[in-house]
Image 1 (cartoon, rainbow, N blue to C red):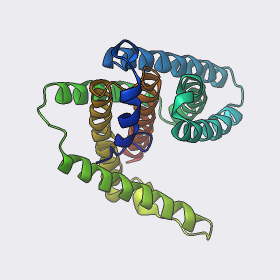
Image 2: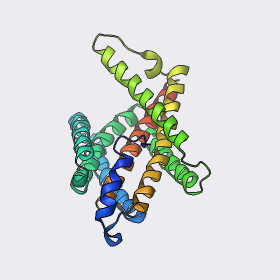
Image 3: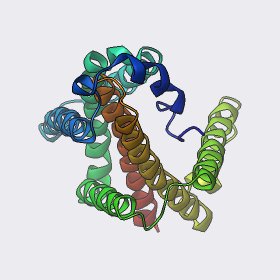
Image 4: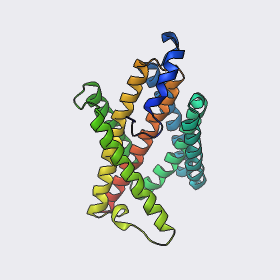
Length: 244
């Protein structure tokens, strides 16, 4: 059974586990350390771009460049996992540029929204980590299947919305600030939050399987992908609530 995070797959560990000694194996602590490093890079770049916006500079190029660069680097990392030690820090920097600019724009429209979104993202992360570590909500095959289906449905909805926009058709119900739009955003936030639990499970199983040390970077990268998605989803939800 695969985790819902597209950068993770259960089939990764099997062959590598037999090639590596325990001394060079992936650990949960090592992955956590690398995740903190990636978050530090993302936060530092985001703060820099935010400062540019505060000084009156145009941050749009940073947003566009960060979005495109982040997507390209994410795809490279997914297809070349052993390069994650190099690509993951650059991905974090690209996402920092994107999030810094986007957060500044949202904060100009709704003062304080960026801080609230960041605080809520951290809160959700800690809550889901607590639920996972205490096994209050066990990660079962049924849970994985449900989150896979929900994530796929959300992706398909966004894809259809994007495709029809080329024909001048919009989907105001899910993007608007009405009841349906708010409920949809709540569902997206919930699905993103549960993806965190599956990511924790993936990292733990990777460590138990004796995956190579390099997989710590890949595990940290995958967790960062989910955190970025969660933050953007919360930011969109809060903006809809502000428009009510």
